[in-house]
Every structure is written in structure tokens, then in C-alpha cells.
Image 1 (cartoon, rainbow, N blue to C red):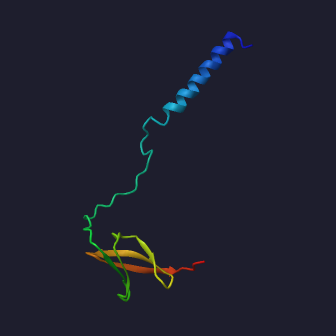
Image 2: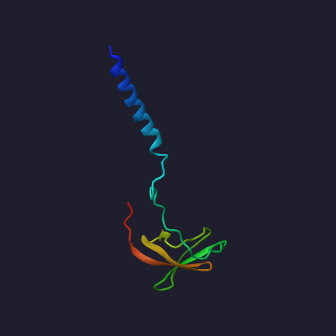
Image 3: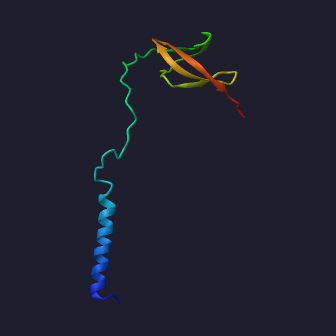
Length: 103
């Protein structure tokens, strides 16, 4: 059986631990959550389709009915990986990254 003095100490310790556990995530800390940098470019107009071309030789790689953003990647039918580098209206230009070996 616990003595009253030990019981009080144990009770206070549990109370402190529980309050610390519940209060620590709530307290704001400076730079606790680092948010990604925001892009301040102009808002891109959305089109019904986008043509994606190789920026080196202007070869048409794909026409898709999905909004394309800079940094999007695509793999062509000959297993080449491209990354979109710039967009002009509904025409996107992609740079060759590497050949991809698919299983």
C-alpha cells in the first residue's frame, strides 16, 4: 500500500505528465511548421487540352485534357522521362530527363 506522501507525489507526477502531453502540441512555436514557398506567378488560364512538346526538337509528345503545371513529368511510349519546364497558353514544353526501364 502506498503511503499518503508517495500517493500525492505519484498523483502530481501523473498530472504533470498528462498536462504536458496535451498542452505541448497546442503551444505555438516559431517556425514549428515549415510551409513550402508559395509561387507568386500569374494565375494560369485553364484550357480544354494541352499539347506537350520536346523543347529540344519541338517534337509533339502528348496532347492531354488535363491541366499541366511546371514540374509535371511524363513518360512517353518509348520509355523516356520528360519534365515540363515552361507553359505558353495551352502549349507546354518539356525537357528530356532520362530513359526509364519499366518492368
